[in-house]
View 1 (cartoon, rainbow, N blue to C red):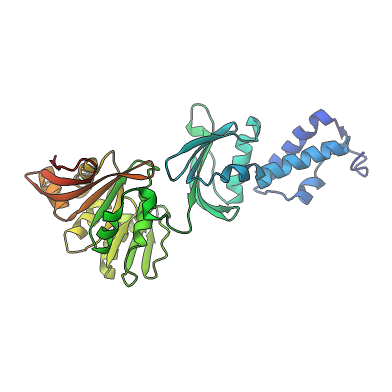
View 2: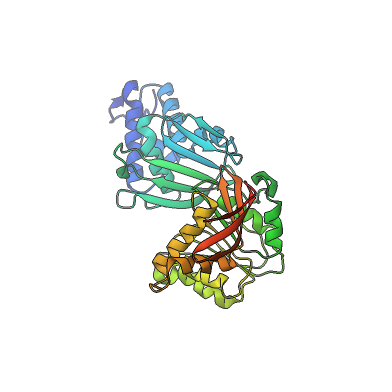
Length: 366
């Protein structure tokens, strides 16, 4: 018999041992503490056998050290989607998708995610159902995104891991990209479009490896994803206030004499100073945007500019012409590959003219 000196306590039957251990673990977590084994062991009740203790030890370390993750992360994928305790999906850089199963019981799914959020000191709960943060697992860096079950009719929380490579991919990994390398070296303005997870940021990170080392880069993001080893860079990460918005940082960055401005993603107000910078002599700008094609990206930029510029007198046709005056290449990504590259030739009366470099080799207009 274990814990013989706890004579005043009631002995817990084998069938109830794990249930009591789980209750004890939850009581620690409710205090904001992830206990170590020694702390946890001291609170265990009397047990009937060494086997019960072994089962509890296995259970404890599974939830606090997450060894069941190690085998999954060996897939070397770029993203992992944990949908529930029964499994999830992974996505590799070449676009290959696969699935995996978790060695975790359904009743412990939310408990494990609560431990994970506490481990990384995140305020994640019903009042704060979304959180994104960075951390390491087995010497690899990841961006963690947690979505609380209160947001879902199924009340199931989710975890998404995005692997952050410490070195950029090779350009060849994205397909036919020779033109893009030349475009970066010649300080062409390039916009990269695609859906979430299509490889926009990965391509942008790789293109930065081909920027001259004597240039001064200004890199602006709302989420830290662009991992650049460039020796001369000034970085801004947006916050929640107007003073720390991407628009404010982008406007301020124009005073820093940048050789090149890199915008992590255009979503709203930040499109205005970005387009104005293109049209006031700044070369080699690069950014990303969510769009369903290369041509759709131009329309989306124009729409965002119209919505947020405050220039009600500027027609949509004029906005298209303003964009096409200095935007030189638009790249469309799909499944981590370059699917389409168009070269902007100009615009007239709101009609943009472009040449398809990758795809159907024709002169087009829209």
